[in-house]
Image 1: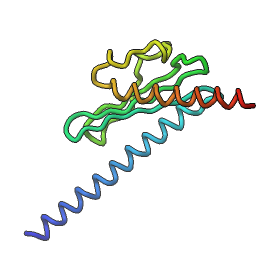
Image 2 (image 1 turned 90 degrees about the vertical axis):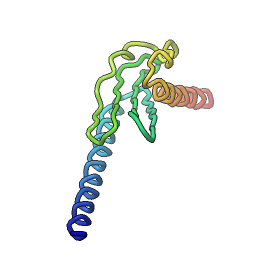
Image 3 (image 1 turned 90 degrees about the horizontal axis):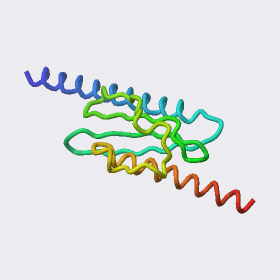
Amino acid sequence: MWGVLIAVFVGIWILQLYLSWGQVKHYQKTVRKMSDRSSGYLGTGSMKRKLGIGNVVIIVADESGKIIDSKVMKGVTVFAKFTEFHELKDRYIQDIEPNQFDDVSLSIKAAIENIQAQMEKNLLEHKEA
């Protein structure tokens, strides 16, 4: 009896590892695809909860700060996938108030901060050159 329970537990654990690995590969593929541009900035933000729905936001902006692509992944399980986040497209990062997006506000804020840091770094590098 115990042997069967242990075998089932190990089987479930291996399945969880495999599905988690698949989700990481999906994340990497999405980031790679979104960053495959000749210019611009990519920012990511995530919010993890111990209980409840977590989320990840990926934003791609051009040199002027206009968002040209954005995706969001929300979910509790490893079956969550990225979907288009149309609410951000064609807006400028300077004009976005993250608090208007209740469930993903912290992730959007972090992604925008990543982009702004890259823009500032790029500006400093150009001034030094």
